[in-house]
Image (cartoon, rainbow, N blue to C red; front, side, top):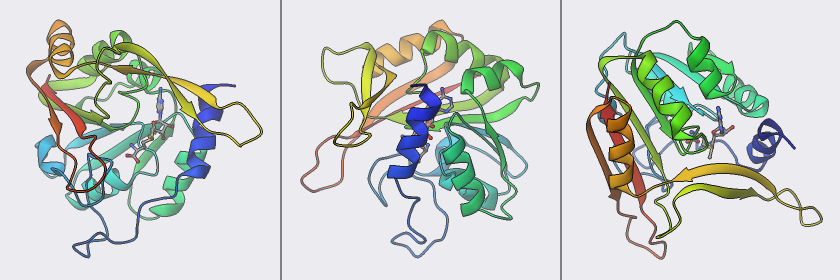
Length: 220
Ligand SMILES: C[S@@+](CC[C@H](N)C(=O)[O-])C[C@H]1O[C@@H](n2cnc3c(N)ncnc32)[C@H](O)[C@@H]1O
């Protein structure tokens, strides 16, 4: 089972985002696993015309929002099903979408990006030893790299197994993810030439769920 097949399975099990958010908006940016919660696109510090890349864009809800802000939105995702769902969900939004492994895309692209981001996306599911230099190479000096994911379980750092349930009768599909504490992410980013690195956990909204969102940001 390849990562592509595993993520295609994930795609079919996870619906696209709601048509409108709590504020009645048809597009919005969400870094967290909770609806209508946390910071928005301001983290990326983009201006109209900015070239922005989403690593593991999924069904491209965040990219569609950046298009409304005047950005040139580029998305890459390893899953054919996710890319097809994004194309169907956002017709006419002028999203540039690529079905490819994020690290390969960064290595082959000749574009320079003003911002690169990943929301529970390829930045979580790629070895940072490969991804961080590739992002740094394609990010313009001063451009923002930001990503979000679940915080680590205390003591469980580096490569972890992540399970995607296929069906009750079959073994789950497995993909790899990389978990670190905020200070460890800061150190990794600085080692790979990024500056002004910050990493923090955005607390969960009030309610029964307590796990917050790790939000990491740095500049090229
Ligand atoms: C949990 S989903 C998040 C999707 C989207 N960012 C969102 O917020 O809805 C993770 C996404 O990352 C993609 N992905 C995982 N590993 C990848 C890789 N190495 N290169 C590109 N995309 C990848 C998956 O196909 C999937 O669409």
